[in-house]
Each structure stands twice: as C-alpha cells, then as structure tokens.
Length: 337
Ligand SMILES: [Zn+2]
Image (tube, rainbow, N blue to C red):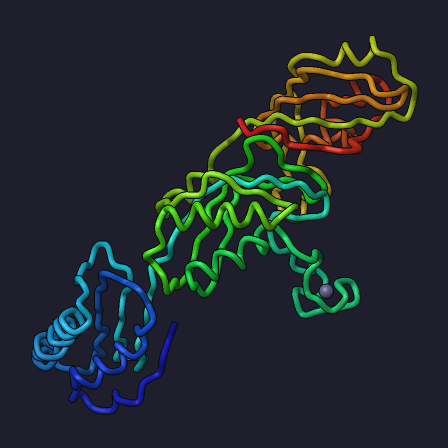
C-alpha cells in the first residue's frame, strides 16, 4: 500500500504532520506492534541525517507509540512503516495472517484454485465467455469470500499441499492448505470465531467442507508445499476389451512406475522421467468392461496415466499389465497419508 505525499519538498520534516498522515492511514487497522524505517537520500549530509534520525525519526516513533498505544517491535511487527524520502512516499507493509486447515471437495467440476483463461489471460474472450476465467468458482474462491469478510482483509492467497484434477473428488481426511490473508484490518479474531466460521462454511457449502482450521505461522506455507504425501486413490477403470475377475486380481501388488511428465501437464511442469511407487491394494470387478482399483501412490505419481499408459510414457501401466487398453473413468482421493 503506497501513498504519495506532498510534504517532502524540503528537509524540514514535521513529526506532527507525518504522524497525522500515518495515523489517518492506520485508522481501522487492528495492530499491536509496529516498526518504522526511513530511507534517506544520498544528498542529505551525514550531519543532517544524524539530526533527522533523532529529532524526526525517533520523535515520530515515540509519538505513534504513545498516541496510538502500540508497541515498537522491530522483530515481530504487525505493521512496518517505511518513510521513503527518496521516492517521496510512505509505504505500509502489513504482516499477513495465516490459517491452516484441510478441505474436502465433492464436485467434479470444481477446481482447487482460480483458473485464468489461458487464451486471453484474464481479459475475457470467446473461450471463457468474457469472464476471464475457465471455471465459475473454485475452492479458493469459495473460501475467499468468508475469510476476507471475517478478517476484513484485502486479499487471500491459497496454498495447497498439491492439488487434484478438477474432475477428482477429495474425500477422507481432506487435503491440507494454508490461507494467507493479506492486509487484515482485524487481527483479534479468536479461535472460537475461527471455529464458528468453519461451521458456517460447512453448513452453507455443499461442494466443499473444511476441517481443523487453526492459526499458523508463515513457515507452514513452505512446509505444506514441500510435503510429499502418499495418497490412497480409488479409480474406476474402463477397458476396451472384456476383462475377467482373474485378470484384474493379478494387478494387485507393488509397481515401480517410470513415468514421463504427462503431455497434458507438460506446459506447466518440466519434462522428465520420475520413478514412483504405485501399489494396487484392492481390485473389484464391476462389469465385463469396468473395474475398480485402490491405489496407494507416492506423491507425484499421475494416476490417470498410470492406468492408461499415456502412449508409452508410463511404464508399467494398468493397460500394459492387462495387455488391454484401459482408461480412468473416475477418480477420487480417498485419503492423504
Ligand atoms: Zn478468455
């Protein structure tokens, strides 16, 4: 948040004037601690600088702290105020609030996050019906409304521990996520209020449910992004030819899969060959062309491709093991392990 000022023209800085500007800006923001930095231009003589540091900078810090009854804390601050005498502006850096939780997704049309239209890059075109996005809503967008309201925040960033495809359900214990609330005006939200929000969302929403909401630290974002969770999947497989109970039973066991990055994601991921374990734990005959498989998979194994074979890019695959062409008709994440 940047605000241009007109009171920078000479080096005669008034504590009162700056205080008035800053306190006006911070009105409406809950915070208990702050820090203040000043960037001085080179032209200012060292002597003048020394004087400004004492008279102006220290004076201003003291005034803000005393008048607004806030703690000065350079290590752990809710707000950092930067007076930039070079750029002639005051900048405010608000510490975000982080909330972690887990979500279930019960829709095969709901993506995890906002899907920009790749064709127009959000401007609006024929493909996206002028909306600039490819899905009506997403887990992220559903949560955004609730959280921006509760924290009176400017923006929400969604960090997921991986993601499932749009048409894949996220069941069981749910997928971990962290929400980053930027520039919150409310910081005094209690654990109880957070729990109440969880209940409210779960009552109102059908396509998603959330659990285990709690406040967390910034470090959690990196942690959940790096976490290599094994997952349990249930896939409904469709086969081109007739299959027997005996054939599908033979699929059971541990498979070391060499998998080249699938074509469908190669625009976003680097093209390389990964080795991942996919353990087929259980199979169930549905009809002569369909069966179910329960797969416990390493993080990063592409299940749809492990089933189809992805034109030789996944070895082995369910298709290869059966010697019959198969494809994944429906997929659910049953559990994040
Ligand atoms: Zn578009």
